[in-house]
Length: 606
Image (cartoon, rainbow, N blue to C red):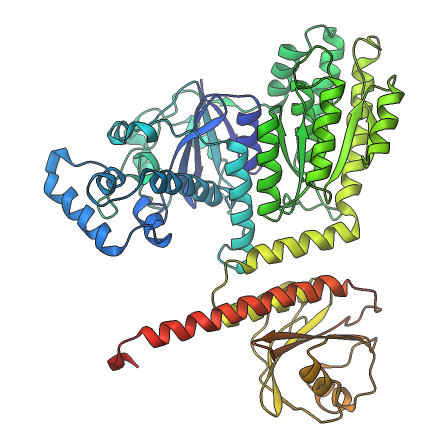
């Protein structure tokens, strides 16, 4: 019987990680007013995906990745059209007739799965159903080469990439986050559906649904398919999942102790809320990577971190640990590495092996904070961990050491770990570093100079109440877009203001344009009182920032920022200068690409 739940109560990221952590096989169907999608899992690993969006088709992915050209795609589509009943999926046709390599095909399939997950992540309302042990892989899969028939992607890697892509698209404005109001409980509708023809009476948007694996059908001929019909639905109950994990792993714990742990984990399996009571979104710039063979702790720490809105990835495989760390750093995530307690007589997790792996990771990644879990009775190991450079050592309960109070001790441990990890990620410097990573990640996607300038403005606005982009002309500056000046800061960038400011020879602006250095503080420059503040209003505190963006050794914009009605505070000028330096490089690349495009156009088009 399928399990079902609402995305409002259990986000799709949590569902995917839950399937991975419990190593389930089955088909996850996700339904939203924005679309429909499907992920297929085999023992917790993703093996295929489909989505109703026209954007998520293999041909489009290959074109946008510049793996194939339009001529190759047209040739493959022509071959398909002439093949009649013997028509093969598009990717198989490209492999056989258009020189597509198997490695490129696999990468395209992986990208398509990631983008399917990206689309699903932004669905805040809707339902999901999980058909455990039912793997609905398209028959079209048999047409693919043997090497591609066993596509098995690490769920944590895919999810990490998808979350970064999602965050980048949100930051660049490609994805708009908004609630999706539902007229009634979607589960009620599904519970009342018994026959396929009843689906036609549901008042939803017309959605074309492809059941072909990863959108392998041709791009322009999609048939309307009936969605899956649920003849029996069982409400998704997080408590039951916790109970199954505990019953399977903690076999020696008395039933009363098990129920205490189930009750505790269920109580923190709810949406995490901000101080104002609103539901928080999981941060995409911070993560916990947990290395342990203890399956219960993997599950419990994952539950705790999700309560705080922190991404968590767990593994008991040393090779996968390296992959997770490398992928996290490459995707501008800031991980904290947590090592589980040593486990005697378990290969790879003896005290000596834990010390060896931990020391190696410290040498390889000196910038990563490490937390070590340890038995409270093994003070020698705890002291050695601190001496080796661990950020903290947490005493962790062992059933063999305190049987009578194990459940209470474990709950106390998890509560304390939750508070500590929250504090780690709430440190001001760490938060600023996370914002820097996030903005740098978004910068990689931008190709146009105005978009790069806008991102620089948005990055500065994270630290100031008011900010304004000034375009540097020969003898004056032009006021461009602003944040917090024309309207409330929460409304984001406003339209260009367009007033001009002459560049006076004795002004701080002239000094910055000549030197390329930033300025943070107060100034007696009359330009502000005479020309700027009459247009934007004077701040309560006269402390301000002037941050130049250079391209080809010339200052092309200056970002002005102040604290508005707030008192002035210290800011991390090094973060700001580093980011705007990277933005300048991106700007140079954008202008160079524009020149190339212009020079490559035929004379008649110029």
